[in-house]
Amino acid sequence: MKIIDKENFIFPNIIDYKKDYLKSETKLPEGVVLEKITKGINEIIFDYLNTKEFQGVGEKFTSLAEESYNSGIIFYIPKDVKVESPIKIEFDMDEENPVVINQNIIVAEKGSEGTIIMDYTSSEKVGAFHNGLTKIYAKENSIINIIKVQRMNDISHNFDSNIAIVKGQGQVNWISIELGSGISSSNYSNFLEAEASEANLSSIYLGDGKRKIDLEYSMIHKGPRSISNIETKGVLMDHAKKVFKGNLDFKKGARLSKGIEEEYVILLDPTVKSDSIPALLCHEDDVEGEHAASAGQINENKLFYLMSRGLEEREAKKLIVEASFRPIIDRIPYEIYRNIVVDEVERRLMDGKN
Image 1 (cartoon, rainbow, N blue to C red):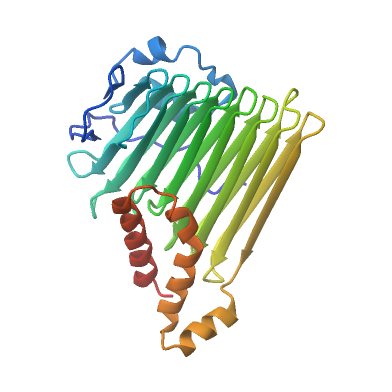
Image 2 (spheres, one colour):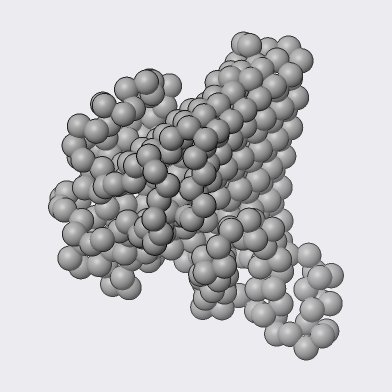
């Protein structure tokens, strides 16, 4: 089901992004590479990634990010090295820097660990454009944590493609926060390629006004005993539209693997449109897959209880929504970004008509 006409989307002119977006606050351990991406580095560092199975939000979007990026990072962690401090990437789009096309390449050697926070914002009156491609290669026993916060304004466009290749007992943990952009499309594809590889994706989204949101999350199990979890919680209000596609794909050889996906969305208005398409594909015996999707209005008993304690209806709804989001927000390991997300959710809920 299509709500965004990506095939006929017209890209803006590509210009340099001139702001300093890479925020490294502490000295990195020896051997760690963290630098802004340069032309040609993709072929040198990431030639072992076969993207033929991956098109992200669309082939022309991923091709644009690979061939014409104006920003992005290379992050390489050597064997058994743990980067304790988070790597912060902050894109603030304004009149002089309205276009971000970024490619990010992250390679974690055996036993390594690191965390990256990516924050996308735009000035109030700027119709900004973001098209991103993030590639992760997590080798054996490594852990990569990625937190993405998208809070661009309502006249901006956001397209974000993400791929992770995970080896034996490696782990990739995503937290995706979708709170902005008039049009937003995100794709996360995780290839669990070896025994006991693991990927977890926790996400929240909030659609207000006439926002269109297109989400596709995929867990492709190739290795035995691989594990995946997708947990998504959303809120729609006003005339917002959303399509959620969650895919658990157990390939031949993925025996004894387990995958879980669930989405729960709160509908604050009868004028919203919400489509959920959970899919379970299986080419192997002895696997365990669970999927669930639910949508509904706020529980009237909860609302009545809160209003009977002196809260106005809008405040009571805000409290219920925040309670739904809180388990995922609390997984963001840094207080400043937890507060940013809570404040943005509150602003959008209280500015609306509900």
